[in-house]
Image 1 (cartoon, rainbow, N blue to C red):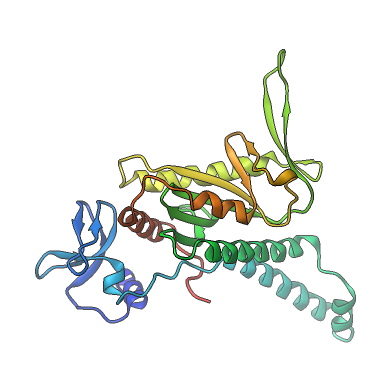
Image 2 (cartoon, one colour):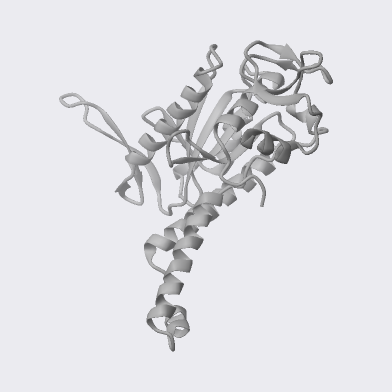
Length: 285
């Protein structure tokens, strides 16, 4: 019943004999003829055993990709609200003055900086990818965890998993070791070792690959990207650390716009599957 209500909320009024499901076998949309491979999300009509793609059932309206930065913004607002309530409760007379005079703690400010960065990246990607077959999904939860992925984009080259960071300072790749010791690549931002950020987006890419492998048996390229909003890239180069490209929003869009093996109907099917398996924190503003 809960699933049925969520489907109706998403697509509005629909025929009573239709239900949303993932296809076990490939098929074609009864309305537009779009090829729907196994694993695609579609609407099955029991009366004639036919299926329809999401766009046709929703009268051609594009699927809402999710709101970039929504979960980080919610966490920021929760922390800010708690701080203000605690200050006013402890100091009924001068609480407002104290709040005006004191800066927010760094732990709270970091969440604001984070969600603003995600919003900026989403806006840049949506502008630069307009008119392409790319499908954008923002602020997606990883199954069975409390973690999220900032942006997932399905495009001709494959599935891009983007982790957004808003750090200032010079971004560079450093290589340690050599002849007598193991070679080690490090990501350094403003002089500090931030290689753990690379490991984080690798884990996110692995989570998306696992979701896809459950129904898509053929190989789908996964491209994890670590995207910096305010960082300084030397000579506008795109460094690669341990196989992961470090990009600006502009460079990320360039990667996504490259040609690749996925045709438009495949992109739609993969995006629909990821949309179903990686829930958006917030689907509309």
